[in-house]
Length: 253
Length: 117
Image 1 (cartoon, one colour):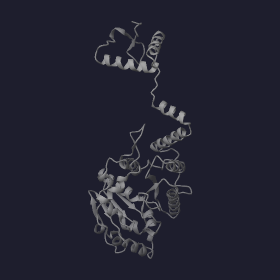
Image 2 (image 1 turned 135 degrees about the horizontal axis):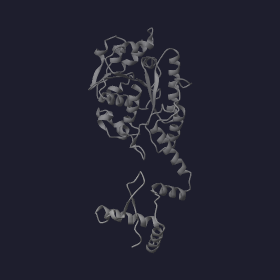
Image 3 (image 1 turned 45 degrees about the vertical axis):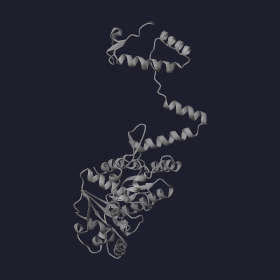
Image 4 (image 1 turned 90 degrees about the vertical axis):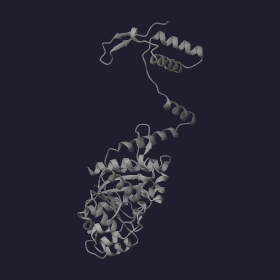
């Protein structure tokens, strides 16, 4: 499962960490791979950044030697600045787009979630080649949605070259239902992608605060709007990561 | 997946997304109204309107009472219904003598509304 958007600051890592942990709470064993040299997956889970990805892809160390347990049933393959060097290394090797898929082959997990950097580079291509499904978190603004279209165009090209990643869902994040821009972009997203658009994640300052305490959103604010959604007239709650989790489980079923 | 964006459009919307878009549409409709119409629309939205069967003479009596008290027909009926409901809950009103067997599949009894006291 690839979580990607070429635009930064759209909530990729929060989405990856929250969904990964939620899946472990349902009894699944999950590996969360950080493909971003900023190493924010480790930070979000209160774990030290490390060069796990570099050691896997460049030093060819076995996967169990480079993953770190972060929570029960949740391991991470951490990143740090050395991931940049791993990218440079990958550009020099043959079949580089398959490198990640090969390195993760037979990994003993129910699901592997790949948290991509906000760029379309060799690691991102490798992530798409290794993935069965793609989730695209996006803010509801014109530039971010342009990023969705760019990414989907790249996925389309990769499929023509034999890739098999399918769009699981587009996840609107930082959803502020009061603004006109949000309404317009939500409409155009729904017009373009129909049921691929998942219920949104409400804007919630607690999602931003959680990493400062080394806690995930589910630990820091399990009843927050970002997790539970916001109240509505007809349905009990709308959106939030629990709704996204339900959509994800449907996709995986 | 197909198309230029690499994803085929699924025609149906996620129900929660459809509800959000409906809320946006309703907000736009309200925004297009004049302030007075908007206020009325908000009031109407908060109202719960019901249609009930009522004998003509009872309606006339209630109308007369509402005029006498200077209140609306709806408000008087709701007020009296609230009081009568409280009395029924406390066993002060017995519906037994007014029940007649019903031929309807939906209800066991027909309740005869008593004539004016």
